[in-house]
Figure 1: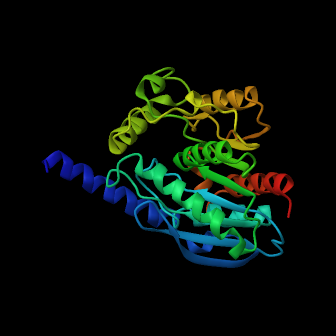
Figure 2 (figure 1 turned 180 degrees about the horizontal axis):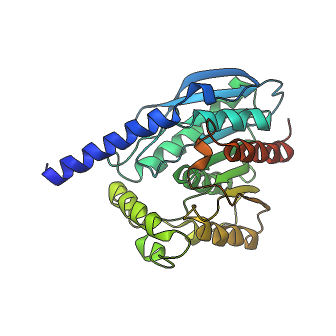
Figure 3 (figure 1 turned 45 degrees about the vertical axis):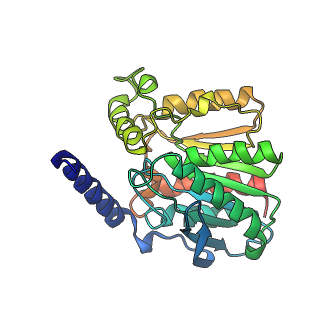
Length: 290
């Protein structure tokens, strides 16, 4: 291993530790939860860490399967504990937050394979949580939203209506540098482009398919939440929302001008984050019912 690779690995390890210190804050978890439980979910290459959240009075609410963001290289169910707890509480429902193998330790398509296995597990075990095994919602932020969108299309192509809703929080639409190079100096694209160059190299997946290149005919009803000037994906999200609507998918879009990319993790510090998650959860409740 080269010295530069050693340095890069050390910096990534430091970034992961820093994010856990900053974001894995137990006190940031939402109130109004009847149950929080760590579980093991079947992945493509072995068990995956997962955490189940159930709001008080969840009733017959469907299960929302959540994939965390972090550019496929960082974060886990602990860094996203507060997001999932607030989503479960405000949707008055159930959320299953599922981890997946990260890059560069696991190259693409390992992340897709884990998400696929986790979705199959969720369908098989939804009834164990008191949820309808025939209606599941998928959700995620950033890279996790990419996984959720890919799995929603795949599941609904196999069985129409299996995924009742997708909740996409500032979704990462693509990582191809040729696409990110457009408008590089506009919409805060420079730092986003640098980040996506690293993500693509870590995944070994410069050609990770753009969501804009996929057939969206099977897309479920969609809730999209995005940020403002500090959210480099917002131009891509606009294109994706337009593409979903052209494909016939109902889309409810929420825009938060003060929200930065990744900002929903800061529920311990930001009223913008908690307010946005409350609104998104309320939209999910209205769509899914209780």
